[in-house]
Amino acid sequence: MTAADGKQRLTDCADTEGLLRIIQSIPSPKAEPFKLWLARVGYERMQEINDPAQGLDRARENWQKLGRSEKWIQQRMMGQETRNKLTDYWKDNGVDKPEEFTLLTNIIHQEWAGVNASEHKLLKELKTQNLRDHMNEAELIFTALAELSTRNIAESTDAQGL
Image 1: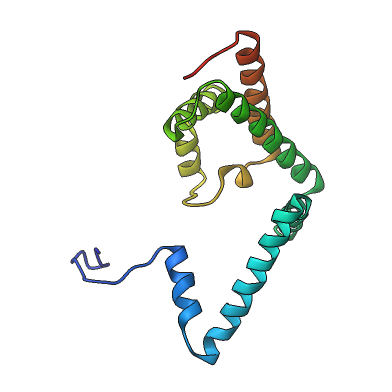
Image 2 (image 1 turned 180 degrees about the horizontal axis):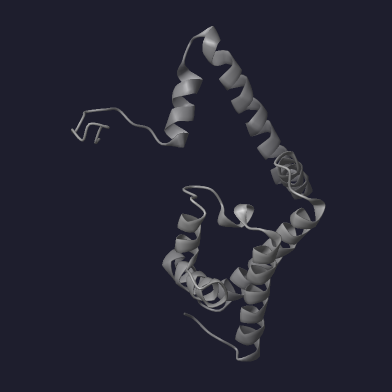
């Protein structure tokens, strides 16, 4: 990898899953808090699989901890439902490749925001974070309206495929 001084350095790397597996295998008392956290998160995820409403409740709690208003949380959740209905329509009508979803999403985003989703993330200085979690109330409303309109047009014209 390229170091801060611009030179190439040999290094070991791991993705998130690999890093968590490494933590699990460390036989040290210092690793124990991480192992307990992993067990708790895994247990919570299993609960959410059995009762998806718990996942929604957890998301709401996390947004509240981040200082989001109840109005923002409601708009975020409503926007996600609108997005899910649109992507379900696309899936049912022949859009099935990730790059097709990206292309269509960027067209919608470009139309309401003047930039595509990737450019919007850059403007907000986001890397891996979810763009919608960093939108203000107006941006959430415009995104939901654009996606709702897109689905309505697609349904009324019986749009198929990309």
